Figure (cartoon, protein in one colour):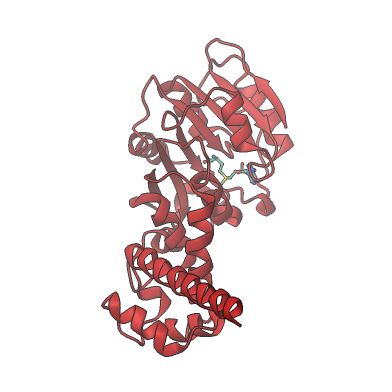
Length: 298
Ligand code: SAM
């Protein structure tokens, strides 16, 4: 990961040294609408004491405004041509640290810690490449140094999935809502980008509410992954076949949570997943103890 620290000074916000041919393979759709950029800054509540982490600064449309409103911006861009271009645009700008590489391949936690980012004291603001939306969200929500808030432009369908309630839940919404409060903030038509993407976008805000714990995560998602394994089957069937728990026993657990025995995974709330995880764990523990006791006695 190469890092360029820009020198302090003034920068011209709209300077564009040469035209850019967008690379589809890198999810490049550049935001052109100044009013939308201003709204994103407002949704992130950017102020002069803020440290901002931006993913995919592209041609610098959002970066320019972030630099005007925040104390500093650290931006990571994968495209070498754009890194060169950004270096030129912001050569005199104050407070920008530009990193070249993939946000998914760098040691982001290590970088944030080494660079003095503190838990709950920085913000992530980004128009992210759509082909890696889910891994980026997973990465941001598993950081030990948590952002105070995360404001992301995502495809409208992804925003709907992230913010879905019981009835439309998926593994992505479960993970995201377990770790953060999520709100859909702003509809952004596809005409706001160049080149124009196929679908409209929505700006979402994620406010982390829970410290990432590998153990909780493993336990909850072991059950949830099994629950979602065949979406057309009932949750009781999926759990019963994955964990070899008699279906009747799973149905009893669901009944204790006031859930219908025929309920499907997408219908559960976060709280119900947490309670169900505890029940499955206790059932497995009791079975293991029973087995150990029988072996000792035998
Ligand atoms: N922020 C700019 C804007 O709003 O106009 C550009 C947004 S564009 C949707 C996504 C940007 O992410 C592109 O500049 C692309 O090169 C960059 N990118 C793609 N994959 C990346 C990755 N793995 N890590 C960091 N940046 C990436």
